[in-house]
Length: 407
Image 1 (spheres, helix red, strand yellow):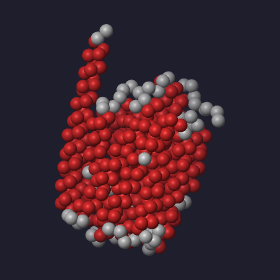
Image 2 (cartoon, one colour; image 1 turned 60 degrees about the vertical axis):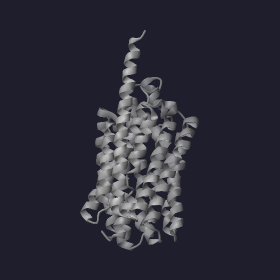
Image 3 (tube, rainbow, N blue to C red; image 1 turned 90 degrees about the horizontal axis):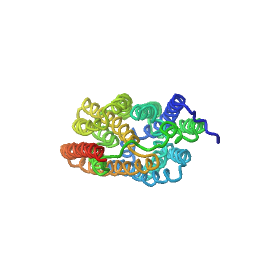
Image 4 (cartoon, rainbow, N blue to C red; image 1 turned 45 degrees about the vertical axis):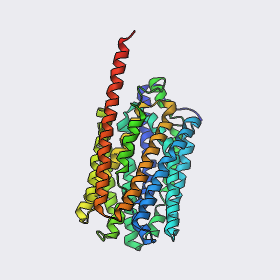
């Protein structure tokens, strides 16, 4: 396959933007499928006989598998450089979503949900490494922000498909089957993107000649600890949607609309935070503990307006965390280790979401106050950990300054 990568910086930039947009459309279709299903997982599991603890376990385990396995797939991507093949294989497992229409037990639904998350673990490190090459010439925050915004547009459309299915059929099965249609769009656009840029690594190498990052993470342990604590206190929407149905706070058709509204917020926030990251860096992460706490305080109340406000805060958190996490890794990691870095921190991210989801699912059965107390404690620890990261950065800068004075 010939390499169409241009030799001048302007050409590289234009091709990079094109690739970011194409992968954004792929994610739009893929997110339409997966998030359409996620918007109703809570009430669907309840309908099949599951409890709040079961919902928390399924949602947490699904996220854990979807993130923890990325360490393995990330290392494989670095070693094999089979970016496009891994992306295609991972997106192919989205076929599990329409199969949910035939799940007659919550155990079967749980298997399919986790199976789809395995697909996400396979495709994401490869896709993010391709994006990291494309964002080098346009700004990491802006590039990942645009991609995340397009991804979240699909997350808005998916729940609307479920709303239409519930309104016209009164059941979830038709909605899951309709979500299978966009899978053709995923395949078509992904194949076209591969034809446009068969060797994405050359975009970054053409730009700087080496592909080496300008710096390193200020110690991966404090950074990983912040991610763990920040996500351990971040509620998942399946539990929020379970609360909406179990408490008879809203109708079944309203729940996907609330999820869609949260995704609209995440689209706007992803674009804003992308530009903000390019200006102030990882300090944007400090908003996560605030949003996580606000989500817990509001989303588990019994007042519809407060629950909706909490859901919107949850959407804002999604827009911030995933954009800044991916952009910061791309900014500070050398080309040959970037997939592994994505894998390690994604594993931490997923483990934290699993632990937090299980804990909050169990605490939900006790009282809402226990959930709020747990989140406040965890997010306070997250803020303290960020100060650890900030101090580590200062030490690195001082050492570099002193080193520059020594011949």
